[in-house]
Length: 431
Image 1 (tube, rainbow, N blue to C red):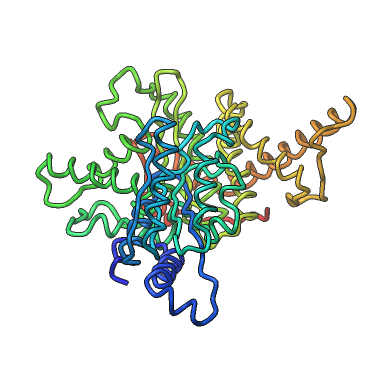
Image 2: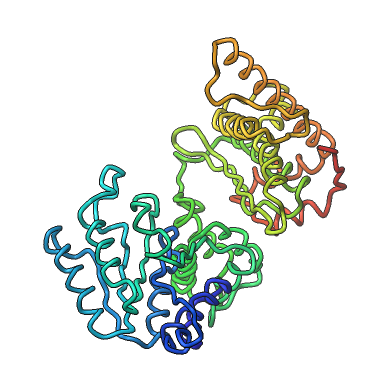
């Protein structure tokens, strides 16, 4: 259906929306065949993913009378308004009642799940059951709604909209760049990898910012620096290039140390999983902490494998400092806390980490049990840390070249890292 052409990607969701629109447009055909038609659809997911666009496309494609409810009135007046809308919708059916941002109808605190607004909506849905009033709703926060409100029978169809990745992200980026040219100094894959964890709204905002930068410089095509300036502004929230100023620049020796740390992260990911790092930089912030290594989870990488590589990669910065300087990295507390949390999570569930299966108790029965669990986690962190050092030691040339480039450049992106890797002999270590 042409009404859904403006939705880029999300093929499976579009298929369900198209079928729902066909049911509403030809409801008597479905009834004559003995089918029970769905009573409603709830579209949920993080903000900025296009839920409202999907709902609006469905309404347009269905071609039946629609009535929209948004929280734009005081509580008492709003409850009366909800009842009025449902009453109007039942006068001429089939029809649609569209509850836009339903999680905003009442206070989102858990204690307010039984707020009168939700009670009123639930009552109104029940009052039109069997009358061919289709209830369509969008929500950002499913958890703040009472479960009774979105159960089957009230919303027979639930659509979970997630952040686009892989081919979907690429298709959305292509859509937003339609009619715009990229300069030769930035590759398409670089942009896709940098924007892999973005909502549609975030993709559009960053790409438009890049276009504004490009136009202001009177470029014929969007350059690498124009895009990266937009990326740092909208996604990293850091100044770009010289504009960071002397106060945020590390001295040469300290910048080198930060570069070693970030190169350790990047090298582990690149060696163990291939093309994975989208950004590495050795910036220095005013609070004396710095460095970024963003990693991209390949679409074909199973979650278990990614989790294990993520743990080893998280230890890569500390392992690199140890390998190069022969001392512990005092600035990797966040890395260790994150890695320890991941290891504990896997050990709670009994997941294997290349070792005999261990299971932790979420509520140890005694101080002795608690001490035993701490020892288990600590020994597993140490074992994986030694493995990370082994991987880096076997690929010291790659680590050193990455360090040199990160230390001497504002940033490295995927194509830069792949070019460096192509000049090195990579040794794969069993893990």
